[in-house]
Image (cartoon, rainbow, N blue to C red):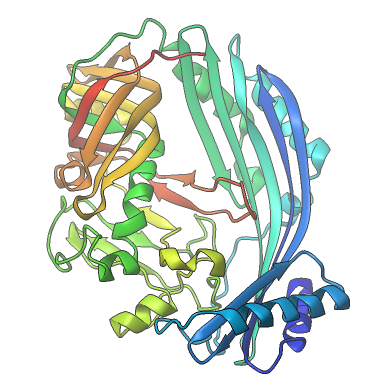
Length: 452
C-alpha cells in the first residue's frame, strides 16, 4: 500500500463519530540556490503533513500534525474534535467526496525522485558555468511528493509525482536577462541551456532607454503571458468568483470576448504539464474548457461552489485551509498558433515593445480583468518588425479583455511556466503557453534600468 495512504487510513481510524477525511502529503526535496554565481543555502526537506477534517451537520473541524505515530494521530483526532465542538455553523459546507475511479496519469519519474543534494548542486553548477561573464542568480530544485486521501465515505486516493525546476537570472552592471524551465522529469531540463538563454538576453539589455506612456502593440514571451493569465485566473477562472460576480466572466458566459485565436483549457491530466489525478477533496480532475475560440465557456469548480451552482465539482479544490478562496485553475494551457518564432511575432507587431517577464503584479479590478505591474529582465523596442534597442523596466496597466481581444499571432511552440512558489508544502503546478502578439499593452511609466 502507498505509505501516505496507509497513514491517512490510520489517522481516519482515530476519528470520533463524525464524517471524517484524512489528507496526507509527503515531500522529499532539495534546493541548490545560487547568487553571484556561487551555490549557497542548500536546502533539503523531508516532511509529512497529516490533516484531519471532521464534519457534523453544518460544522467542520480541522487540525494538522507532522507526527505519524499512534500517539500523534490520536492527539490530532482530539484537536480536530475540539475545533468541531466550537465551530460556527456554515450552511455552504460541502459534504465529503464519495468513492471514485481516478484517471491514470504520468507525472512520476524514478530518476528525478532519486536526485540527491550532490546531483542538485551539480545541475546548479552546470547553469553557473554557462553564464559567461555575468553573475547568475536562481536555483535548481527537484522533489518527489505523495498525496493521499481517505474518508469515512469509503474514498481512497493516492498519487506520487515528481517535479524539477531551474531558474536563471543573469545580471551585471546595467544588464539582466531571465530564463527558466520546469518539468516532472529532471532530464527534460537543461540548466546550461537555460543559463545561456538568460545570459544572451542580458547581453542585449545594456544601454537601455526609456519609453513614454502609451498604448503599444507588443510581443509577450511565455513567462509574461503565463503570469498575466495566472493573476487573471484568481477571480475569473474561479467558480466562487463567478458566483460572487467579481469575475470578468460574470454575465459573459457564452459570449465571444476575445480573439478567435484564444483558447484556454485547464487540463491537469496532460502529460506535457505537471499532471495530477485528483484534487485536495479527492475529486477526479476534469479537463475544463475555459475559453474556446474566443468564447467564454466558464470557470473551474470545487464541491462547495459546485453545490451552490447546482453542478458537480471539476476537481479543482484547494487544500482545506485555503478553501475559502474557492477553486483554482492550476493547469491552464493556451492553444498554440502558427508563428515559427518570436521574431515572426515581432514582424506581425511592426512597431511596439517586446516583454520577457513581469513582476510586482496586482489585480486592480477583478470584475474588469485589470492587472498592473512592471516588466523585467528583458524589455525591448520593436521597430520595423524587428526586436531593437533595449528599454528600461516599464510600468503597465492592462485589461485582459483588451490584451486578448486583438491577437495577431501566437507561436507554434509552448512552454511550461512554473507558478509554484515553494514557500509552503511543495505543490508543483504551472501554465503551458506560447509567446503571443497583442494589439494592446498599456505602458503607464518607466521604472529602473536592467541590472543589479
